[in-house]
Length: 370
Ligand code: SF4
Image 1 (tube, helix red, strand yellow):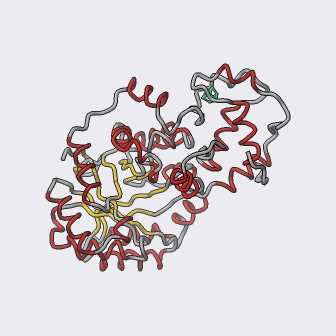
Image 2: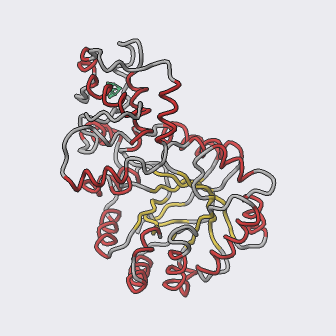
Image 3: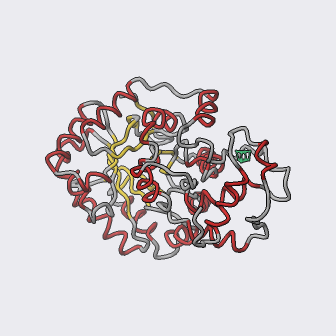
């Protein structure tokens, strides 16, 4: 498998990292088979979290491949925010993973400025991570988060983390554009190494797996962590990266225009309708991204897709933030008003009039059935 250096570290990681989240639901015998096959085929980065299945994922990984510890880099995550609890969590992780050191310990889910500050405050989790580093229990200290990157941006501006891992995919880039326009460039500027996750949008891009993986691997990341719980998924992922070539800018533009999941509904934030009304529709659609990732389009879909959408739309937990922002905003959509003149400006064929009204009802949290 192709490898890339992880930023300024000495670690050279395989393009695909093995994510441990789905090992919680996978029997141990299958975990053994999958992880050993991944290592045999050139994979060298395994990542999990203390939180996954209440340490179950870590324990399964420990049982499966700790005898091959010198063949891979190992990372886990700590959800604790105080020094004492984080120190305990790191020690438990080492025990569960049956190893004496971690290559990376991630501060897990830095989703807000408050979390970022608590970690760095006196008595916060960072003190435990630094102590573990001094003791040789961990090499690098990283952080993770997904969705709106407010907490991550605050964190990297306030501490020189070594590594950052976040969700990157061609769908959510339009819901959380700050990831690609602010967070990633800031990390590059500060020499913070980057890892990607959620290339398939938590499963939402299931019809376009190859394209989705290719898109994310074309961003400035060293390795893409994929959740793998079946042999056929592992084979499919390996086949994709075996032939990996970065997507050109024009290919990416074409993808943004034609992607099935974006269709004629998801706002691409192109700005073409921004200066023709007394407000900017793109700003309203950003709030919709925060609310439900622009997944509920009000059209009838097949039951399986509907169920998937229902499961994923509030996955990142930003709904209340979106409602509060709309409540406070001086811009309110009038559901009685005709906004159809805006439709002709959209190069993606979005019915802006209809979408604005639907979004208004979402953001008023009313019982309106569209
Ligand atoms: S023109 Fe369409 S894609 Fe562009 S900002 Fe407006 S609604 Fe979004």
